[in-house]
Length: 162
Image 1 (spheres, rainbow, N blue to C red):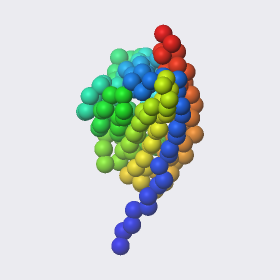
Image 2 (tube, helix red, strand yellow):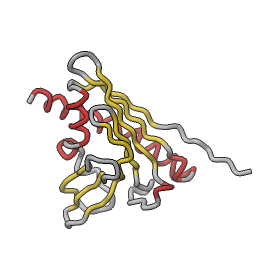
Image 3 (spheres, one colour):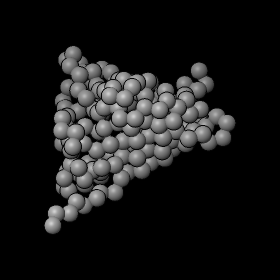
């Protein structure tokens, strides 16, 4: 009997000083303003990070050499509420074209008072990558998402006051 070992999802929460609509817009349409250019797939420098605003749209990096590299594809798009994207990246930080081997990221935006939003991020399905690769990716993103969410929160707060 074959058994699949389920690898625990990474869950992170942050409260940002922005409405849910503004927080959603900052995370998606304004991702290039806060996503670090150092967080790239492969060795080519990033000039822009883009999320296309529709189901099937790409989350991708435009690179310095004029090429694009896909981070994932939008699976759910509910502006102001949540979105889900495939994380089509291997544990070696290379593009993973086999969707059956990709993990998934869901981001939810929940009102927290009048001008704040609780943002809940869940990165899951690491077992699709295989035991060793999945555990490696889980460890890496578990340590990476907190600093990324802090950068996002700063941008959301500045966008709210603008």
